[in-house]
Length: 389
Image (cartoon, rainbow, N blue to C red; front, top):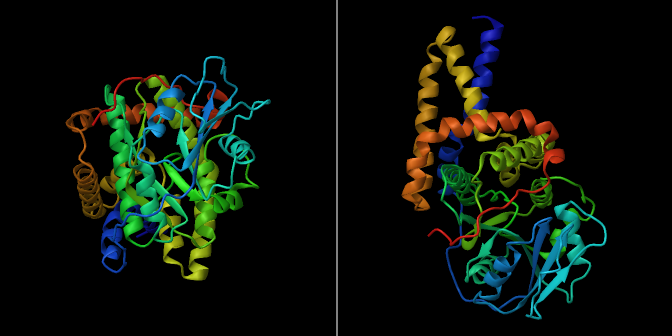
């Protein structure tokens, strides 16, 4: 066998690791102690930071959902960056409306704009998108996790709209990542991946991690999770801390959003390698498992690489097809286990037949990724209907 074939087989083994991670996590879960005790804890003080860029149409709805929460110890800071706020009025004194004098066009700059104007020293802060809606028990569920000693928590971002095929497929992907990168990762002794909103932190930890990283463009959560885990902390997963998130419903919205996400993966890919090196040096399981996740390409790219490998195997290494058959079996079991565990709507199952079309639009996004932040800074929001339960 030539050296080229050996290299080809080795690369396939590396790619295949990503498909096997759910199995590895499930095994490690049995060796990881997780406290399942749930208790009522005191109301700690939260700063709720809502960032809006150019659009404020959905802000009153997210603020109203927070004000209706079964909780009282918080202040809401709405940062309306480059927005017309002439019709944005709030009567509740717990809502502080902020409009930066200069355009920030940056999540972290908007967050720190609010932090610098905190009315009091909040113990925790939570970040909510302008298109989110907050479950009434959100803060109580966060408190249960913080009470166990964690300093960073990722909640669940559940779809509030499933009215189109693209929205259903978007939610299907989110459920898959929620299951693998958050639930199973955390239960295996690593950390839950951050997802941009529906997350909360000890205020001093957030400031420490991002005070020197006020960059533009998408991906602040990638830097944040790297800094938290590099510092030796774990990010907990709170399954019952739910925010409802708008899923992409139109093709242009999908392509632009995915282009930014793909750009972010390429931009911060190096963090995975850096964390992998650190984890091996420190023999740190949390950092090692998380670094593998950071090095994994987006799912559609992983599928494209897999297809190339299968074609290559048909031509040159037929016995490796057994390996890929096993990997694809693990993938489908993981996907349907995720959909079953999080009780996916039947419309999501029906939408799976359109996966090839969904992948096609993500391939288009791949070619726009380099200019992603020039094309659009934020996702345009359309959905204003009721939450899908």
